[in-house]
Length: 600
Image 1 (tube, rainbow, N blue to C red):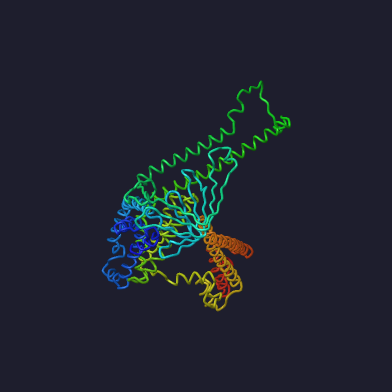
Image 2: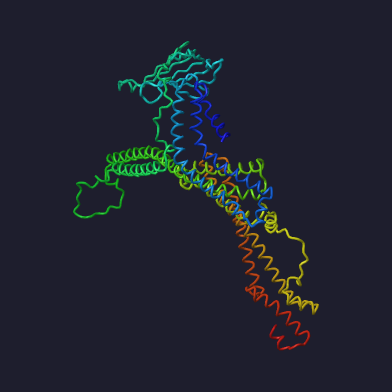
């Protein structure tokens, strides 16, 4: 919590510095911001604490002592599991009640602090609103109080008109003002004054007049009387989605959806009315129904054709402009609706995330068998960053509708759920986190790395055939042919399995990288997204090659079976391999020749 509070101070240091705030206001600022850090702090805390505690148990052989007395891992986790579930429920009520209250107070406090002594917060390289009339941007500041300015650019507002019609530029400037004075004096040197404020007279406005003048020295006095009389306890903004609980969010979401449907219907009605479809056939009566299949313009003379085409073009352009304007407006409203849906489901997902991360951290601590603050801290931070950034990317994609907002709120939690199940299962079975045999053996099979063995026809035969061969000390030629065919089929089948595994692996890689490309692209990470797209295309290409290779190998197996007249049934194949050498044994020892012929 201390780390995130310090990060918050540095994040908002510009808003706090130079405002002559007392410690009570600063303490309120931190108090209001602390609850909003809980969704970040609590999952990381649970993950780290569970890894540390269970890692310490495993490191000190406490689990071995528990198991020797019949206490399983599930029983050891039972008490903490109940506590974590209770904590998850408490977290839901906290996020539903306390966090909206903190968001409401912190937002209004920040808004009020921003109005205090704007003369002290003219930051270089960006526009700073000073009073209700001026937006000031400076390239650089110098002096012991930052009073000397370089390359000053000022936009002046004119009454209630929207737009910047008056622009002032100066090479240098200086701020003057007394500490107890409510007047800020800005002195500009060597600059230009531009004014293109539209006149009230319509005819004069059509001429688009503009005034330009040069000055050596220009003084602006800004009255700060009203600005410095700010009530920090004033709270007049309460409609942001982060300030609402589940009940208010549900009501607002329903209202926004109704409003969205209403806007769509209004747009449809507007476009229909602009088309004049409802007036086309009014007053037109026909004695009988006629069907005309030619070009409708052929019914009019050239003058009327030009009028019709001009009317249609203008109607199309105006309709297109209406759709474009409405599209921007409806897109903004859709983003606003998605933010409310995400805020609602985040309150529900936070409690579940705490429970799932506990079942990730506790088994993981038991598996890595390291307590303390070293390795558990590294592992916990890596897992939390994965969880956190997946959630950020998903929510950013959901705001513009690229991803379902409900799914985006739960996405990172759902990603951690299989990991928690897997780790809990391995810890319960008392298996290590990394068993290299399970990693190395599949790699050996995939790469066809095998121990060198002396494979003879004798070792590949069934037990009955080996006994016969040992007694006769001879392998019949026909049996060897069958054995070689059998070995060839087995060899091709092994190759088929290898190709099929590679095809499956590259298909999964391509299937994961392709949606990742869209997520990263929506989050303005075009370079990484392009890399993912290229890797996905390569993966699908390699998958296609291995798929073709596995199909060809499978067809070759069928072809070999057909040409060699070997049975497709492995039971019949084994029976043939047993009976054929038995027939040879009976015929060699002259035992029941009729039976020998039957066996053959």
